[in-house]
Length: 469
Image 1 (cartoon, rainbow, N blue to C red):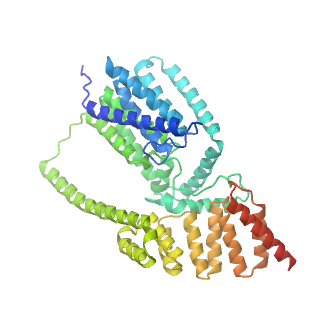
Image 2: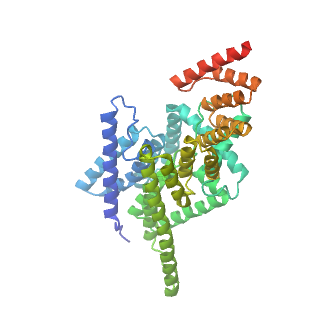
Image 3: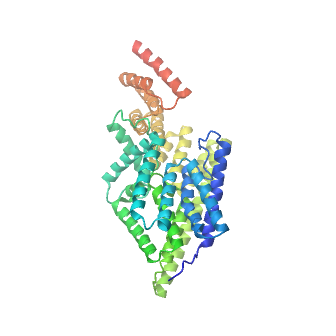
């Protein structure tokens, strides 16, 4: 019988230690900065708690690897697992808590409950149902918001089910579908929950929207290959690598772990471990290896040069953005125009470029850049920017169209309605002006602010003055 020889122990140690340090940093943020345990600052080195939780969930299996050891490694492993688990729980990431629970259930089944499969299955189902229901009611508004996103996403899938919208298709089209949803469902219960969205909070839905059923079948094929590879030689480290993939798979049901590069690294490493341990014997003729090596080398040079040029351009763009107050309009626009050929496919750059032009009342050029951005990306802020440019160019009917789209994208926002009020005032459309004033006055407020209060008071005065005429 073959022995389990841990070939990747050093890598497992590095990942376990990194996860432990990240968990400690998160817990320090939680207890030091958040005495009321709101969890808002618990992000580790990430931009939000989802990144922290996703990394810790994917990293915990590598700590579980050492539970089978004896002596100090086992106790250190228990410490690492405990600290990481607490960090995931206190991050209040529902996806993280669910993923953590599934990882522990699989580990217990694999090493302790294999002879009680029925009991394990029933227990797992019950625990999963209770967890999902409980996690839904913890943040019911957020959960309902995701239901809206999934409804609109399914509409996208229904329109292009086979091949999808292509890479970036969700970002370029989703908000248009959300706008159409509220156009057809006036007074929907989701109106106060809708916001600008760039991810469906489900990696599988995102994949199907972008690549259709064909792409999803390819993904299933990859999963089947990984499973068959594991089945060839199911040793301990392959099981741990599989647990990492399972944790990411579960997390992907309700969040966006693949937005973080470290998750890609862990998944790639896990797949490599499973396939390498399967011990496939493939003989490739030397001439084909040389051709493949040459192709990889040339591709690497081209891809590397592109990445380097984009990185330099993005660093320059960041520098311009930070020092914008110190530069005059001419210098800023000159820098942006120089960066445009390299970053013309970056929607964030295009939006910033158009916003700078708009701020300086260069509406024509701003509209051109904003329309280029709209080919790659669609959201509330961009629709408002296009509307503002058209308003500045006195194209009021076209501006109205974009303000209405923005208003339907995020029905709880007041500013699109306020801009429509300006359009109707400029076109002297008294009936529409009265209606928009009334709508702003009676509109429920999602988040109270002085700006909204002033807006409502202004509309009340305007409404009364028009009625007296």
